[in-house]
Image (cartoon, rainbow, N blue to C red; front, side, top):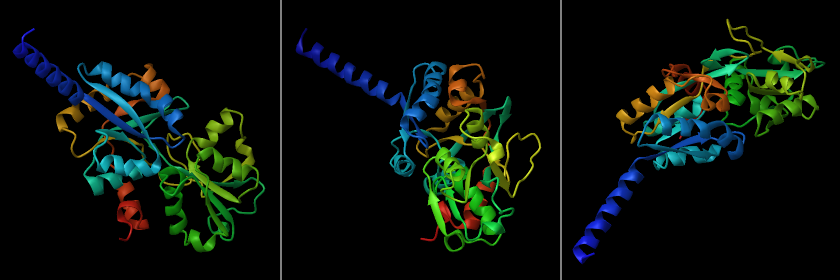
Length: 296
């Protein structure tokens, strides 16, 4: 091969490599229960999009709570899946946009919304939110929407200042840890996202009769015990720099996902729908002065 031919071949190789790199997209996902579980749940979704959109490759990137915002701010991911409150923070701070909302599959139902549940041991004398004053309380994480922020809104509305009115305010890191802490008496009360108690009962870890639900609310066609209003489920979102045309392709593909596919089964969803209205989530942040609306 002549020098000119070699040079041309190298240029074509570089252009091809650049083109392939440009067609690889990363999906950040909040690894609330660790990277192994996040990968098990969501890798099939990345694989599904890779198959559904020929010429494009999607890679999963598990992100710890404190790694989400930096990854989005630095455009290290093009799409991301986080809890609804974290999404609002990225929307306000970094211009992120919801692409689709997951439809959670629970007890044979397709659910676009979820809530938080506040609970105590069944033998506890506490029967109301007010009765929780002077108690030791555990939530999941400060940035957990269903595992803290929803309950915090109910507590504040009831005139409770958790930092002053609880003898202890602890964070267990995982929903299961909170449930077990209440079960074994390490704390007096706790909060987790809806469906956690029922799932743990199904797995044989707890029995619902061991607990009393505080501030119980009934929601039509919602099958889980709940103490809060319902809020829209997690969205798949795009960063500001991700092209709208690509986002539409991803949204269309997600909405075509069938419930019997591995991507849906692994993620425990029935599919995806158009982005829900996340205004109630933003209003919660404003009221509590947290996340995007925390005092600077």
